[in-house]
Length: 97
Image 1 (cartoon, helix red, strand yellow):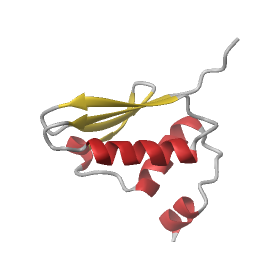
Image 2 (spheres, rainbow, N blue to C red):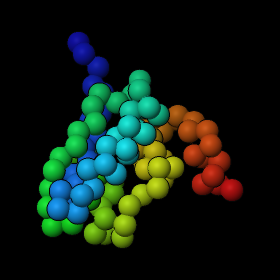
Image 3 (cartoon, rainbow, N blue to C red):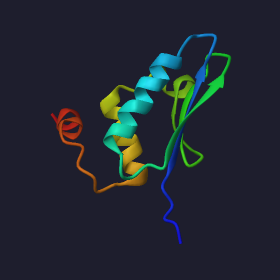
C-alpha cells in the first residue's frame, strides 16, 4: 500500500506576477523536504491572492498575515505539518536566535 506523502499547493495572483516568487518557494520546499513531500503544485489565481496549503490546510494567507513568508518561516510552517521532528538546521537556529 502506498505511503501518503503530503501535497503543498501555492496559489498565486497572475496579475501581480507572483509566479517566479511561487516557483522559488516551491523549489525551496522541494529541496528541503525531498523525502517528505509528494508534490508541490502552483495554482494560478487572481485578485492579489497568495496562499499556501498543505493537504488542504491553509498555512499562509497574504491577506490574513500580510505579505509573504520568508523562506525560513515557510519551511518551519511546512515542517510543523508534515515532519515535526525534522531539524531545519540554520532555519531553526535563525528563528531562535
